[in-house]
Image (cartoon, rainbow over all chains, first blue to last red; front, side, top):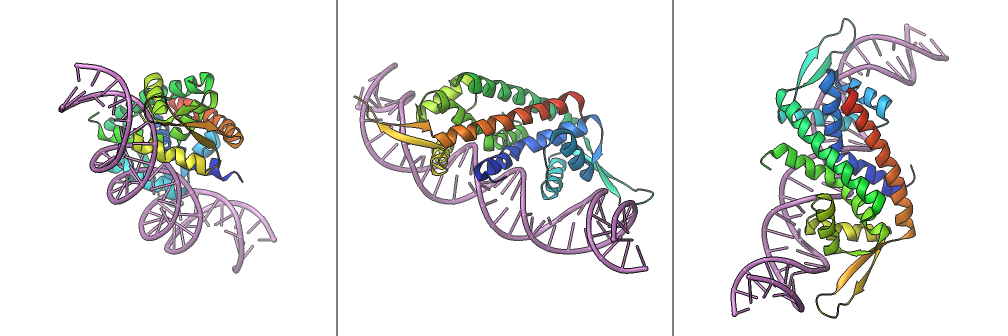
Amino acid sequence: MNNEFIEKWKSQVKKGTLSFIVLNAISKKELYGYELIETIKRTTAIEIAEGTLYPLMNRLKKEGLASSKWVEQESGIPRKYYLLTKEGRENLELMKAYWYELEKSIKKLTNNGI
Amino acid sequence: MNNEFIEKWKSQVKKGTLSFIVLNAISKKELYGYELIETIKRTTAIEIAEGTLYPLMNRLKKEGLASSKWVEQESGIPRKYYLLTKEGRENLELMKAYWYELEKSIKKLTNNGI
DNA sequence: CAAAATACATTGCATAGCTATGTATTCTTT
DNA sequence: AAAGAATACATAGCTATGCAATGTATTTTG
């Protein structure tokens, strides 16, 4: 709220981190779109807009990192569940490795300056 | 290299993290542009392209988070040193707080899934 | 003397998040 | 029962940012 720079910055930080976040989220258990948004909001305080998530999941599918399947409900709107492909799992490991490096780098900077 | 998805992803992760990184870097000691690039590359393995840094520093100045001053050398090209403003220092604290939250959230996801 | 390094800078492209908007069904409240 | 909220999907257009390419100029190195 009311600090414009910080709000814009947070949105920029999400570019990149969101794909990492959702790939992690579906790595243990397949989830559907709406569930991804709600669960991530509840457990991490990271908010993903619907207009962000659905295009993001489509990109991940196009890149071959995730796949999806429709599941009909006995009652209610059908859900599209997302799951990691083998390639997605491999890339997730590379992303984790880079993320840890980045964390370390930033820790160094925030503690010591340079 | 050669993993296209990961390379593109790393570039996306930088959107947002770079401003955080350079603000941290100049928070302890004023630095000039070229020095920022070289020092950050050396101490953190994060590479910032020149075509990224100079527009970035100008944005930070326009937002009022950083200021700059030219320093003539006895020999060589003049250097433009960047330093944090009071507003920059305040915003950096807010950014640190958010970053720690993000780290925690991602740690939760990478360890437990959801 | 040529090449590399130092030091600044801009232009245009590609990418990704967000708001607004839309559709459709089901559940809750009045 | 009707109205509104919640569930569940999706797209279009705007905006912001990193990067390659390119440019200028000086100094150091081989």
